[in-house]
Length: 484
View (cartoon, one colour):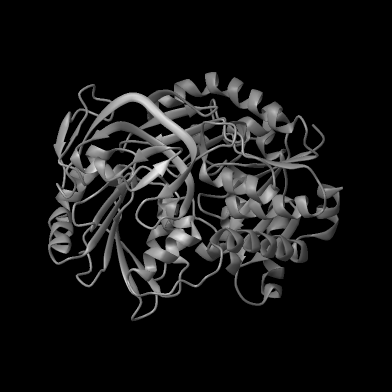
């Protein structure tokens, strides 16, 4: 391995994912062979890597930024929350086990060997590896056995750049507090810091830079402005759904109930990017908008648990009322399973509830099974006769009369179901809205003209714009040393 750098944050959601992606694209544009790496990720937004197996969706995006195939080694440990206290553990792309939070702390030393093995695999043919931390290194209560931040950095000997988010306030205290609380060996790994999400005149923070250096001795590698292009990238964490802006008045309204274990919600990003679509994420305690033309039930990490929450919110009756009014419904993966008559889990794979009545909008039923389907797929929409590409990550086998009307043909086999009146559709294929042709046909069926631009091209252009902006605002000497 030639060179590596690790971006850690003073907290979660400080923008590490976007900065790693931007630096990967910048390095790739300079002709370097660059790879992203995240030792441990916690997210139900997963992707299927090009070499098979699950990784965090963010690392898939970062591999796209680096212009290299994605690999399970880019995110060797992926935690997928199933309950408030427990997660499924994915190791190097495969299900490794399940654990509650306290139990997982005891497992981490075993997982570090997998992390180091994957780090070596990622760095084997790379000029540069850009590593993303998780949470904050100042969570010293979790330092013992850590594999996500300083535990990895000290083991691998990778220097750290600390990221502070000025938009949330208290950035000086966050940086200085991190310096104060870290043990000496961890503090010595930090080469410097960046300020992220700055709005306005950057010179107003000159005294802040002096103050941080006075307290810590750390150099500032740059003050990064609010990157508007980042809004065109798929978000990783479901907390982002709380902040997404509504579409313009008069647009086609599409409602999406936000359930506790929502998964792969980036399926919806191409619709959110359409100027004539108002994609409404309905939070707990809110009602589904009565004027919605389409309701989408997205993926779920725990179908039965989220189906129970759907009912607890009263959203089940509102979806049924929407369908009775002639509204259309699309269910993806777990959302597809919820649309059926019954979801059964006889082996208790998802939890203690072994069966739950579904919405009954499709004449199907699903039974959970231990074998997990994980694959990239090419498909054909039977509804609109256009090509699709996406991926499948799901448990369970779905059968029933409505599967005789499949919504797609995936790799030559039927998938999903369509109701007899054609108003309710279910599929296991994630990513169908990314197909520009499918999205255009879907919106046209509501009388809406799609923008006509390529969603994937829009993401790629956004990555180039972010890379260009980082090259402008980051410390020139530091960038030269990093990029050689």
